[in-house]
Image (tube, rainbow, N blue to C red; front, side):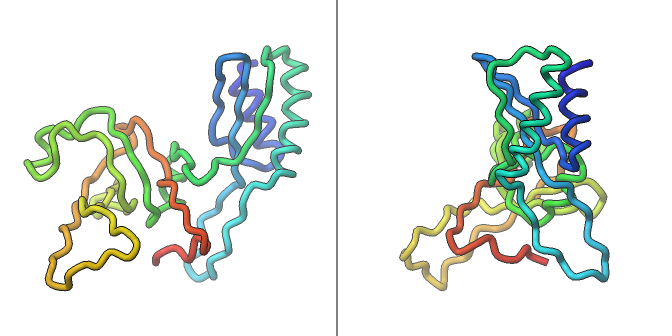
Length: 192
């Protein structure tokens, strides 16, 4: 059996989602897991998000060690972890789950003439809020205004930079990740 199949069967069999498999130099096999996500019902109260614990990673590690040994997969070190604050977004369901979150995307091709002179034609990287596009698909909404420094005064007369939006499909993306937002006061509620 292929490594992808072995790992996927083991991880999903234990009740987790497989986010990523990565092989590195030196025989490192890195597996990233997450708890399964169900879209909340329309009339249900939002449930607080659960996170992968050390015990979850340990359980998956033990089971994977047996499965990989049985199938004779060659590796020197196995590492099982949670996706972290810069979680990769790979599947349609990941995008549905994180609507309204701040994300970083990298396009396969530069934006080119589609930028209409408002966005640099060579630009491939964007950071903004993930939204559903009206015509279907996805869009990212951002402002090119520099972030305010703590304690910096901003004139009330100054107009904020305009918001820009760009639609995209998953085929156009090289990479998409949650933007690593560190807030020591907690993540707070998701915007409605």
